[in-house]
Length: 301
Image: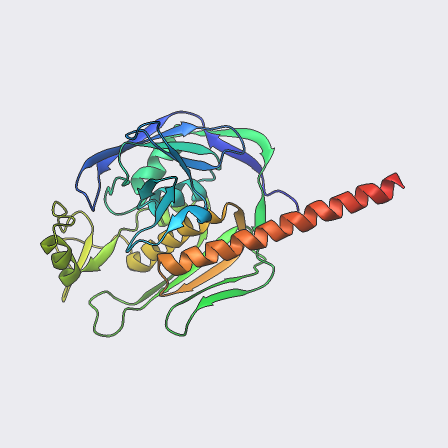
């Protein structure tokens, strides 16, 4: 299998600080360069021994409304926006030091992470990346919610997200189709923010969750549209769900060649597709290695 390009890490250390949406606690991330082959690793510097958690689909744990990774008793949560920025900006190897289990919520988007990573620069590592080529369709879910990966002649990964909460929802129906690449991510995908309906926001805050979050910190929809806020894109909600898909699929561990179509999917279905893509890529690597050995043996004979 031919590599898409050489692996890359960031050139300089960079940091992002904010507050966790769920906990309300101040927290920060420090992005560090890492050797080729490291992958993306979260390091909990607030815990004894600074345990590390590799961003792999095997470490994903089911959590409501966010993606959580757990390994050897340590966990990090709401990692999807960080992972999306790293994947789209083509950073293959990076250690992300965290002083809290929760990532900074920022404005509910991936923009702060993308800008920090761009500012850190890129270092080529001269070792090939490995990709999964979607060579046959995969579809998961049911008639109401599903996610599908299909082959594509276009380079890299393209994602289409179809959002529809039904006629009674204040969140408007929208569809978004965008390529996931370094040239367009920061402008067209990263700024799309987390959203929810007003009754959901009030329910969370009555439970003591996200008590510090205001209607200016993310997009809250009332009957007349966003409350005390304006959309950055007409299809901002579906763009944000597309953003989540990028972060969740990055856990497969491969660069992805093909197209993904998601219809009302969430983190659970995204994670299941990441598992399927991991297995597909592993099979392709095995066949590639096997064919190479056969070719060498024939030449030697």
